[in-house]
Each structure stands twice: as structure tokens, then as C-alpha cells.
Image 1 (spheres, rainbow, N blue to C red):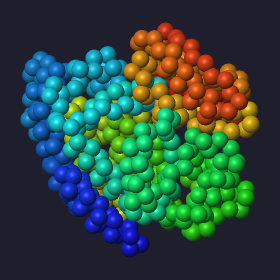
Image 2: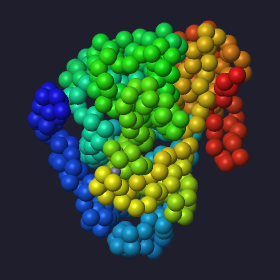
Image 3: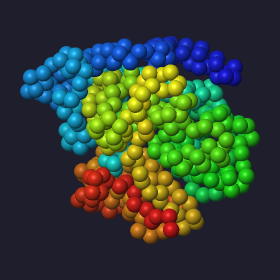
Image 4: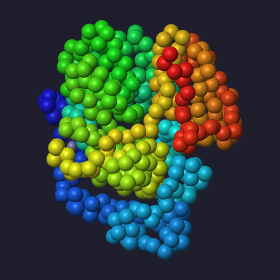
Length: 446
Ligand SMILES: [Zn+2]
């Protein structure tokens, strides 16, 4: 590993975080060891964590206070049986319908609000406490480190950019942080066509990253054009990390062939951050089992709904939360020696790209990112009926202000040159036969 990356990730960053009173370095050290614990030891540890969380939820969270009172079962019994089965499955709709019911009456100090646009077209607003945030950061760093991507090692992120500029102070702080971490960002939402992809290649050639972090569709666009042009990064890449969408086998093949390095798939969400990531054995994704308990609502080996329990979010406990993704378990030990359970992969994030008259393609992920910050929007779906038009179908809890409409439409028009956008309030959004909402319905690839 380069000297700077070693110095920054092992000395500078932990010292800075300790000075701020953060436990992240301690968690990182713990996670480095727990990933190879005997499965029984890890299980005992995490059911202990779960018992603490449930005990807190009974006192603090109205939904669980009622449920445990009526259920005639205790957190201790659930933890001792090591079975979440008796606990209710909670959904985004349940939380949306009664947000206060799922929040701690007195959240830990420093808890803050977050939102997600969701991959099912329903924004969600929730709380996170600082210690949970530090756990999340620590598991994310571990997962990324499996791909050689540690803070301080040069990395280019083809990722979602800001839709509304940050206030200058926050922008400066983030800029300095990224500089220290040696991260360069390229706004993937602007990567509509060959010219923008070419510009991303220039950033990569100038900066010379070891790792590339991208949406699968972004890495695919880069790889496809790289093959066409005969381009390879000036400095060979060590790894490509993908997230936010499922990495399809054909995408992986194309990216690895074009960019000349292995892909590492990650799985995460705004609600929980990194939940699973690929190790150098490239056989499934190891779960961040110290921070989340994942259940697959199907017999072993079969694909089912994924349920997530976050062990450390005391501000808003998510217990058996159904986020809408599908997954299956991979059996047996991994060649890498880590004992963390593995998923074969996660499905359920299929959305169409929206096209522009000039031949550009905008990922459907743009829309959850854009719409997540508007509490008035209960649900949405974006439809492209013609090449020069998109319609934002919105189920609204209350009317948007004229200013909000303007901001949303301006962002869409800016991201999609030559395409007119309009908002259409609707009573409900049709679901697919399996009960899912398609966030974007494009024109197809004809
Ligand atoms: Zn492994």
C-alpha cells in the first residue's frame, strides 16, 4: 500500500476521529478481528447486541412498547432463542403512516435526520444516532478495504453529484475531507453521452487512481466506450467497486475486460449503508453481520424478500424491515477465510434509464436522489412517454409549493437536456404483479 494511504488510514484518520470523540477506530479494530471469528462466537455476540436494542426499544419506541406488552414475550426470550421470527415485519408504509411510532421518545444525543428516495418510489425519513453512524462508517471501510480501497488511497468516484449546491462552508469542509482521503468525484448524473464519458476518462488519466467506485451502469458506460476507443487507464487500476444497483454478470465481464481489474460488488442502502460486500474470493457478498442481521424470507438457497435488522440504530430501531430487495444465501465457507455469512447477490433494483434526444442516458437512480428530500411526496414514478418528455407522477400528502415544483423541474431539465419535464399529481401508482412499483418507465432501448 502506498505510504500516504498507510499513514492516513492507520494514523492520521484514527487520531482525528479519536480527537472528535468518535468510536469508529475502535469499531474498525474490532471488525478486523470479528470477521474471522468462529461463527458461534459471532452469533452469541450479535444476539447480545440485539437483546440490548430490543430492551431499549421496549422502553423508548411506542410501536415496540405496545407489541411486547401485548405479545407476552420478552426481548430476553427472543435473544435466547436466537430467532427474530416472532417479531413483526415492518415496512416503509408502516413507518410513513406513523413516523413517531417508530422513533425513540428520547433519541441519543446528536441523533440526526436522514432521508431516502427508496428504490420502490416511496421516500422515507428517519433518524440515526451517532454511534450507529460510527458503526456504519467502520463496516463500510472494512468492506471497501477488501477491494484495496482504503482512505488515502487514490480513488475516483463516478457517483451522484449535488442537485442543489452545498452551502460554501459545508462544501469547503467536504472538499478538504475528500482531498485528504484522495477521492475525486465525477458527477455520474452528468455522464449522459460519449463526451462526458471521455471527460471522466481524462480525470482518471490525470489523477491516476488505484480504485474506481461507480454505479454498475456508470462503470459499464465507461467500459463500453473504453473498448470502442481502445482506452485503458494510464495507470492500471487495482479494483472497481460497484454499489447502488445490482451488478449483472455481463456488466462485470465487460468492466473487467475493458478496465483490466477485478470488480467488487457492494450492497447497501441509505437506511443502513453498507450491508454486504465482496471479498477477493469473488464468491458472493459477505454480510456486515456485526452491524445488521439479514433474513431471507424463503427456504435456504432460494430467493426471497430481504429483512434487515440494524443492531445499532437506537434513534430509530429498524427491526425486520422489509426494504423491497430480494436475495438468497450462499452456503458453506468462503475461500478467503472470513466467516461472515454470504449472500449470492441482491436483486430488486431494476429501473429504466431515461434517454435524451441527443442520445444521452440518465440512470433511473437520479430520481430517488432528487425526490428524497420532499416530505410531501408519498410515492412517485417517472414515465418517459416520448423522447422529449418525462412525466413525474407524484402521490402527494400535501401540495408542493410553486418553488418546490420549480426546483424539481429545473433539476430534471438540467439533467436531461432537450427533454421537457412536468409534474402530474396522481391518486395512486400502479404496481407490478409482484406488488412492486417501477420507479422509472423508459422508452426501452430500441
Ligand atoms: Zn470471502
